[in-house]
Image (cartoon, rainbow, N blue to C red; front, side, top):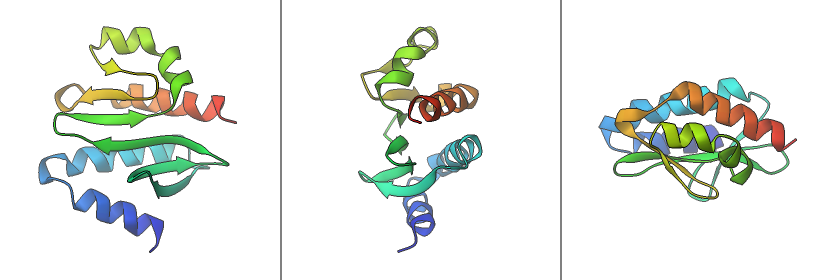
Length: 115
């Protein structure tokens, strides 16, 4: 299956209430790192260049962003200020508190540190 179609299908299989959020997330990542190859890996959309750069996936109450540990450490103060929970490799952005500009910054940083 074509990867783009796989990601399209994945988004379309999600609850209608979050599909637009997933489409917007995908667009932000693709605009920020157009050089990355879009793949479907670990059961979620993945952006790759020689290795994984960033993934995203919906959960019941939040959007999961998986950029790896370096971007999370770099942005941890901002993540705390926004009230996002995070771990070594994941950020949980509640649907009502999404910050696409921060997502863009995290994506760009993940790209930078993974080159």
